[in-house]
Image (cartoon, rainbow, N blue to C red; front, side):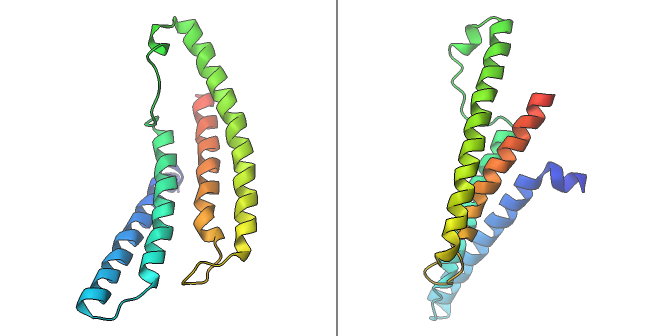
Length: 146
């Protein structure tokens, strides 16, 4: 269970990228070998790719792999760096909570809008954004408490 919690973002992103590859592969096989193209494979691949992008970005946040502008930061004394980090984390936390609220509202309103081919609620496309912000908030709190 600890493994699943520790690597939650990576596990979901990995499953999503496997779905992208398999769905795209099946789409190519059905179109060019079986001469019976399926329309849903592209939609599944697109939805899974959305999951991959947002969950991969959440994993990158967990490991501090996002771009940092540290040209000036590196010249600061240690105390100013600490204050700067706290201020940055506070501003980002407020922003992430606000955007989480907006993404939840957006996902809820998208429930009544079906996708073009599979006719599933569009919320399934939008929910990785909610998971992304929840993950970033949780991982930021974990970093803050260390």
